[in-house]
Image (cartoon, rainbow, N blue to C red; front, side, top):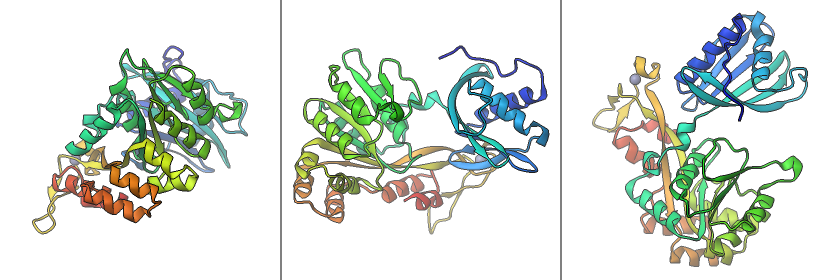
Length: 377
Ligand SMILES: [Zn+2]
């Protein structure tokens, strides 16, 4: 990684404006920053706690200059304006250095540039800070303490799967443990962990990375995502031969994940013998301390709005989870190729709470609002 570069190297309006926008975005806790060129105006928007909103409308005269300046900072080819590019940059902003992932997109009136702000604090979060209920956390800790087995995190994009995986890896990251990860892309560096960025174009996909890991004396493997049978097969076999394997899948809930693996073509006996725990998750916004009681009939709290939360009523996010250990009874259901509904029923019998229930617990405690939970479960 190159040394942090200050974006205020020159005292010109575009440089100063950019420095202010980036400092504001980071200070407000944004995850993404969009620079959008249109015919008669340009716009900067940012995403905070999952919600996109406008930050500024810079003068039209700076429209192309902003894009060029960002491309220089990210060491992209400034002459290439017809093809998408992606890169990274590290900037010194307000006394700390911040990493960004930068992507460009040629649109009708210039290049749209999106910055993903890589929050290294997210990668350092402990499992206890992620919002698991005590029993859920205990089940997760037990599963990752085992020397073998497949632990799966599921949910849509942006549901916090990577943060959960990183928290598990940080806990396992000890001098006596060899950990390798295959990620697409590697977002945050984890010292002590061998992280490999996937590069499909050059032939380095999840399956080839996994195969290579197995020749490198591994203990714990993390695969960014299981999206094909080949990757699923290797992950399953590795988890049955003395390795702990962590990965993610795009499914709605924990029971559906087992059926999804079956549908991908993984034999039922392999699923039953390898998967030890499945976590389904979503992110909900946390109510700001300006929240007000919703009234006795419904219970819980409603968002209000104050200067601390930018008048949104919410500040920060937390996870809601369904944590499902694969029990002997569930293994039997998998072997019988039972329907998702039957697996879900068995999970409930064993005390596994679903995402909606987990969310309602947080509503009753005033951590989030009913609206947030209903919107994502
Ligand atoms: Zn507030």
